[in-house]
Image 1: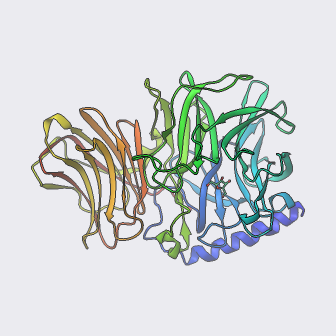
Image 2: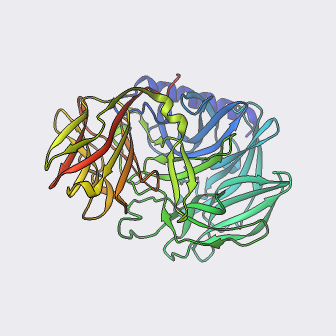
Length: 492
Ligand code: FRU
């Protein structure tokens, strides 16, 4: 197929999205999170700052709210606060990406944006049953909107069924590419390639092999320096749940270690979840012009139907998170400072004590909000303390500290729609600071200044939603209880 066939395919896909968008239901559609105008999205791709704007591309199926052959959708922002939907950027058009333009990343090279993605084919043309043929491909753009494909740049042993998701960075004159591989003995690995021009690539080494023998593939690896260390983020396929960790069908986590060009990666930590919530996968990071490491993750899932699919859309990204390395080698994640630019009005209850089994309304109605709570744990004896989000009709979810488990949790047991269950991150300390981003269909919780995150899709229910402080089986003292209403990120 030729370049013009990509243009024709992009036009068809845009028309399909416009058609679905006209029927889109908005009760769960995000006000403060990136999503497609309509249709399905998964992983964030090609994150960069180019031509004076931030660009976020994402895995996109423009023909339905289900996963299907992949395109790259696109949004952009001047300030990381408000966003504009852009035309779909990449569509299948080569024999090698016939069944999907899979995940990948971007590099700014002078006046050009260079993107790398996995060209995906099913061997049998219809399903994974007889395996995949996956190769790494390159495309260029001068404006971030329209791309010219350069074709395949990395081919692997053709018998390997999982060989995908290139993440590229540059140091000095050398370009580096990592991607995920299922090895010949079916173990999850990250392979490293190098290049001097971004076009011709050489195998360097197997940089990382997951010690978990159940992990047969590592999807969407990311690798970057943070503090005085290097971090490899990856999404292992196959591991079994371990306590509170790895509870989802798809889980993302990281290891911290040492690495230098030409060397092996030396692991300094075990695998830790990047987020303990029910819906966080395939995160990707990039460096902002002022040198911050910023990541977006995907909030969605492949395992169960998602209620927004009835409304012609599915999947959203997290808010942009700034990553930093703590002294104990935990990767901390907090909403970028710019996110506060969405705040419109603030309710501040100051210091409050909630009596045993009592409640206090923080916001009587909310659409999307950014909530800051500080709880002085030694000043109370509640077994659970935190925030209830409740509808008029009595559906509710809890965002709480559980003093028995010593964990911060999101409990969706009484959500009106969608998955139930709870997810919980460890917390160990006296003063618990919680930052909670509530949108129409999701909640992101940042505990202990981002030491742990818990992010889940939340489909609460009909009618007005309120946010209420509570203390259960004991009292609790909040030294801060502030809620900021948020405006919408959308310019179009
Ligand atoms: C992860 C993933 C990637 C792949 C893409 C396909 O969610 O499976 O490994 O490139 O999604 O949409």
